[in-house]
Image (tube, rainbow, N blue to C red; front, side):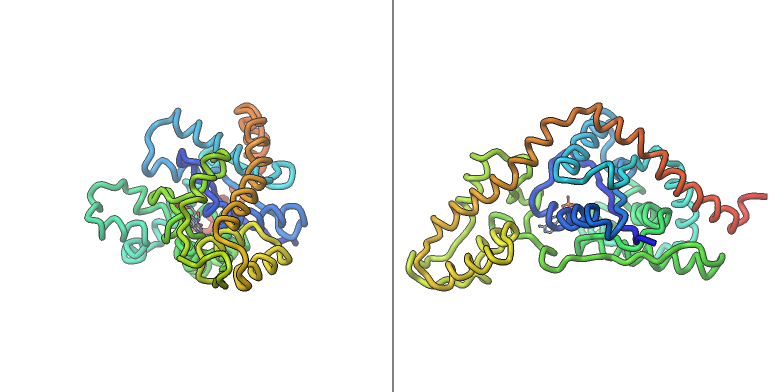
Length: 327
Ligand code: AMP
């Protein structure tokens, strides 16, 4: 049977940046979807957005925009199962069962909650921020996902999903498949246009919906060292190269590395090339995004959510049988 790869998309209101795009392994997902190596499941994680966002109109618009962008990037609703988490009761139902099997100590060790404590904000966050890794485990386990592509920051949550699945299987009998986190080391951390990790909160990102001029402004400020045109440069120490290589195939990469190492090419010219490459990458995505309507997205979700619901409900029925909710 073809293995399943599952990923969630949390609508936050801001468009993806290239760090999200590569870090969340979207190119690989598109490749798997097209080659059939995995069955790809993509769910709209709108229950997760409720942990911090309490405005239905915004959640709706953010959800639609986020899905438009994924589809514009190449996720194809005819090949990838794209569904609406909140419309499938099984997510909340399984979450309760898993919550009751999770020790407080385990939940307290989850990094989102720990970060809030470290920042002295534990009293201000919702209980949802504390328990969302448990919902995330339900999101994964309901569909017998084999692999979950994640950034390093989410690895802990997939490991928890494995642990809780194992605990359930031991307590109530074999029910859940144990998922594997899938981390792509080469893009585990995409640098921003300063020296830090690309992030919305540092405002050092290149967005997938940025226009040509904005990209140019951002590329210009990428830090470089003092080396002149003819000086040999070390690509592995260059922020510019770290970003450039995301857009290069093997052969192009060899050429750019040689340009760095041999000297004869200045940072100005390399920045020009990076700008051109980013714009050429973004243009077709932005064109497709602008062609999609809100109705297109609603109708995709309406068509495919019931298919996912059948899979999820079957799993919850099995779970409920085993924990004796059914008489
Ligand atoms: P965020 O919106 O910052 O929570 O990011 C969502 C996901 O995008 C993370 O879980 C990572 O998988 C990925 N991501 C975000 N920023 C980067 C980055 N600079 N490098 C690699 N992956 C990233």
